[in-house]
Amino acid sequence: MPDSSSGKPAPLRDYQALIYGKDVSGRGAGAESGPLTAEQEESRFDFFRVKFSPWLTPDRKAALLDLGCGQGHFLKYLDRQGYANLTGVDISPEQCRLAKAAVPSAALLEMNLFEFLADKTNGFDCISALDVIEHLEKTSVVGFLRAVHRALKPGGRLILQTPNAASPWGMAVRYGDFTHECCFTPNSLTQLLTLVGFTGIALQPSGPIPRSLKGLIRVWLWKFFSLYYRLYNLVETGSGGGGLYSRVFLCLARKPPAD
Image 1 (cartoon, rainbow, N blue to C red):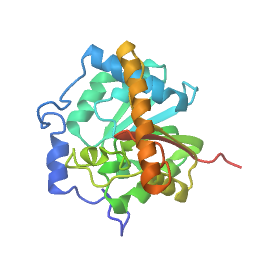
Image 2: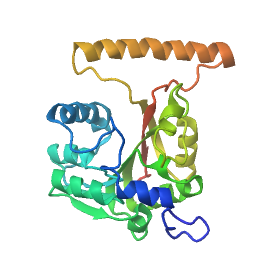
Image 3: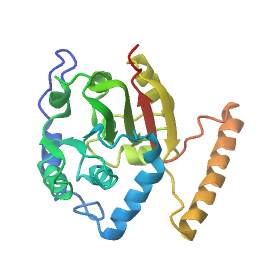
């Protein structure tokens, strides 16, 4: 985490160092604690395909960076899709070890995200940060987004995934991990991205995907309940709200192309 006054990374707090040091083996019962099963992996890859593939550059030689790459699930998906220039960064030694095993061809760095981004300028076509910004202190978020903006090439893309404070269950996710420091609504995240220079911002809920008949039923039920919450907002406030009610939401933002 950076020191907002100096712009330099600050030492991890004691609980952050403890948890990130055992980010896999220290998780509680029921939490993801190692490589996914083949079925779990295919389910996650299908989610990436439906939600993120339309946002990715079609250029398989593009430089792609995954910040907070964890065990390398998204990197492995990108590798499977034929992207050859992959870099992953994570502060957890255990996560980096698993990511390297999952995607041997990717460049994996175990380091603080701010330290990695400090000297990067116009270097990446796409940067992803899935379940990352909620781990930053509020005073660090703008600095992080500025560093990402600087590290992207003109016309480059940023893909984010983060808990949704506008969801009826958003706080359960926000406080479900002790290292979560802040939470965003679609409106507040859009505001920050715009302030630091991003354009072309697109948002979508996470929600179920139609992988099977069961999945298709879940999709239609989700549409129904989303309509219910929209009507609830309309009755209470006179506005339907933003329309994103999933526990987690997804965001695409673009760095403007060079003139």
